[in-house]
Structures are given as structure tokens and as C-alpha cells.
Length: 297
Length: 284
Image 1 (spheres, rainbow over the protein chains, first blue to last red):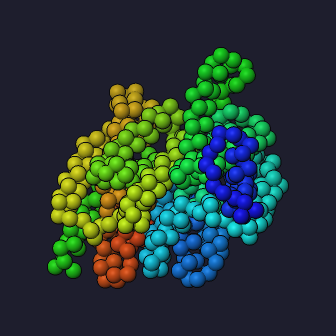
Image 2: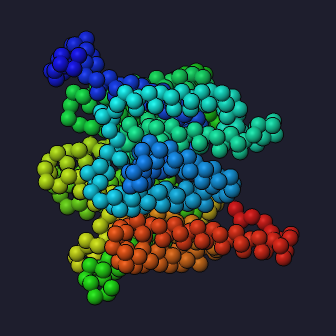
Image 3: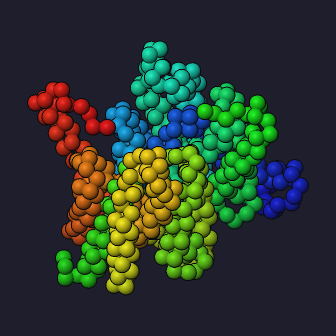
């Protein structure tokens, strides 16, 4: 199969093009990993946007970078660094959120945490001499260099995180929409909040290995934000968020294969274009048929 | 330490950039716009790389991108305040653009393997020329003066937008102008400590000041002082131990100061509540 694979370029015949895409093992791995990541990011991102924890999610995705840098400095497997640092970051973020201070003070604390994480990351990279060539791949990922072993690990982590979210979906939704009422109803709001950040950290650590620390965020936030614009129904919203993440990931990978530009550029541009389109079209549709798409109060 | 020219340049530029970051940061935290500051730091990265690709001066790209980015964020956030999802989607795309420019730049310049990108991301305060320092000082002073000129109405608009609007304060225009000003300061700071790390100087000293005092003008003073102090401490550390990069040390100092301030505020609150049990309430 490897022998048969020849780069032919875009033929504009969809069947031939898709056949060429999957004739390379590295593209198959990239597509498998992209699919897993897109499903997971779609589910978890939907809850992240619902809970207005975009800044926390972005900070967690930044924490993956010093994790990877520290692991390569000490000589441990990079995956361990990703998961260790993201877990730690989730703990700190949960502690910050637990103080229930004003919005400004909380965001200052999150921002300081993020800056410290990045400062440490740069420190580790400069202490580890000669890694500067690898800095770009730590930050921007290696979508096209994924092994089948990595795909297996990704699958396990994604299955665990999605199962955890599915298991806690109802109380988590309740606690996210109205924390006070949920608390009165006996839902463990703080525990759920911490658990969610931990799952977010896990999924971010996993995604950073593919899209890189800087671009994880694109798959987490934009498809979910688009889905929230389109529907406020939870089940439909999650499904839509996953579907959008899948489409932009597949298209992005295919476009990156047939051109010289990086995959991160295509994924972010496609998802942002979709988001803008929905933002522009939705008010027009809502204005014409207000009964079909009611404005949230 | 002061005998070295690069160190003198770094100290002078760092002092003024730090002061501007501390003052502007105070309002950023007050208005709960740290996430917008975060977004602007990524816009700075993309702008600088775009300038490198086109072949113009990096500074031009930085300033154009961050000031424009500030205005875009202001326009996006006008209807719904603190719309973090819109900010997030916007700057995820900006990052994607940055990656595009980075890949074009690294393929175009065969010799330098991505060091341009690293310089933008993490700054080069020890590599500033005397001319860089002059521009940097002039712009930082201008940013500080502008901020102090609009400080009173901005404070009013930040604390109670509805009442300020009723009194005739142009709340929307002030918000827009303020974000453009944050963009200007972000461009300054990303030359010194890098696009990824400037959030530390913007958020940490200001966060500490908000914990230590509730009086706004005292807070501005504390925030500016702490930011300048962090720059000095970081530069000294990096000079003494040359393996430690200066931008990392500056941000680590700023966050260290922030953690100390939080601890000090906690101690003060518990002491006050133990002596006056009725007064002891948490500061919100």
C-alpha cells in the first residue's frame, strides 16, 4: 500500500481525490486522530461555551505547552507532561473559580496563571538547548506525524472524557444554566465545576498533541459557539457542535494535503467563516420568523 | 550591570513599557477585559509575522494589527458586554492566520529556522537598539499621558456605565478608545517581552493592586510601581543568571508579586475579621 501511494495532486474528481488521501498511512492516522479529537472537542466545547469558561479553556490549552517543554527537558514522555500540567492547571483554575470573587479579579488571576505557564514554558525550552527548532511543533502541533500508537491513546482518552461528560450531562447542564437553583436542588455544583475543568484539561492535553498548544482552542470554542447560535436545545446543540467540528477538521486536513499551507490555518479559517455566516444569517432568519427562533432573554 | 549598553537599554525601555502596562492593566482588570488583552496579544503575534512576510518593518505590523484588533474587539463587544465567546472565536482565527504567516516566513527565509517566530512570541529585550529604546519610551509616555487624560471619565464609565451614560459620558467611544490604547501598549510590550507573555505584565501587577487597595488612584500607583519593579527584578535575575531568559523572569516576578499580594490581602482580612468580627467581610 505504501508502494502504491504516489502524490498526484488535486484531480477535482472526488472519488480519486479521497482515494489518494487515504492511500498514505500518515494521512489515515491524521484523519483518525482528527475525527476522535473533533468529536471530543465538539462535546466538551459545547459545555465550555455554555459555562462561559472560554478564558479558562484557553489558559488550560496554554498550560499544555510548558508541560510538553518540561517533559522533554527532564526526559520523560511528552504525553506525561501534557497530562500532568493540564491536570495541575485544572486544579488551580478550580481553586480560582471557587473563591467567587468579582469577574475582574477572577480574570486577572486566570491571566496571571496563563502568563506564568507560558513564561515557564519558554524557560524550559531555553534551558533545553537546541530545541528551538521543535518549539514550533510544540506550539503548533504535528498533525501529519501521528503514529498508530498515538491514535490508540487518543481513542482511550476521548472515550473516557466523553463518557464522563455524558454520565454527568444532566446535572452539569443544570448546574451550568442556574447554579443557585441547582445547589438548592442538591446538585454538587462545586464538585461538578472542578470535575468539568479536569475533563477539559484532559481533553485539551490530548488535543494539543495534534493541533499544538496554540490551536486546541479553535476546535473547542468555534464549532461550539456556532452550535449555540443555532439552537438552545442541549441534545441538538451537542450533536451540531460535533458535526461542525468534524466537517471543519476533515475539510481542513484535505485542504492542507492538497496545498502547501498548514492545517491549523484551514481549520481555524473554516470554523470562523461558519461562525460569522451563522452570526450574520441568524438575525435575518429570526427577524422573518420570530416564532421559530426566539431570542434568548 | 549598568556598564553594559544592552542592559541600560533594556532597563530604560523596560521601565517605561512596564509603567504603561501597569497603568493600562489596572483598567483592564477593573473592566474585566483581561480576556480581550489576551486576544490582543495573539493579534500582535499575527501582525508581526504578517509584517515579516510582506517584508516591512515588524513594528509597523505590530502597531497596525493590535490597534486595529482593539477597535474590532470594541465593536464586537458593544452590543453584548464581555462576550468571551465572540472574542475567543475571533482570536482562534487570528492564531490560524499567524500560523499561516509563520509557515510562509519559515519557507521563504531558508537560513533562519523559525527564529523570527520565536522572537515575536517571546520578545528580545536584550536586543533593543538605542533607537528602539527612544521610540519605545516616547510611545509609552504618550500612552500613559493619554490614559491619565481619560482616567476620570473612564473610571466612571467602568464602574457604572448606565449612570455615566446618563450624565453624558461617551461610554461607547471611551471603551473603543481604551481598547485601542490597550492595543498600543500591547504592541510595545510584545517587542520587549513577547506577544505570548505580555499578558503577565498586563494582568498580574494590576490584579495585585486590586487586592491591595480599593482606592482607584492609589491602585493605579501601586499597579504601575509593581509592574516596573517586576521588570527590574526580572532583568536583574536574568543578568545574574544568563541561562534564564529575561522575558520569562519578568513575568515570573510579576506573578510572584501577585501571589504575595493575594496572600497579604488574605492575612489582612483574617486579622481584621478576628479583631472586628462584624466588619470582617470578604472583599468582592
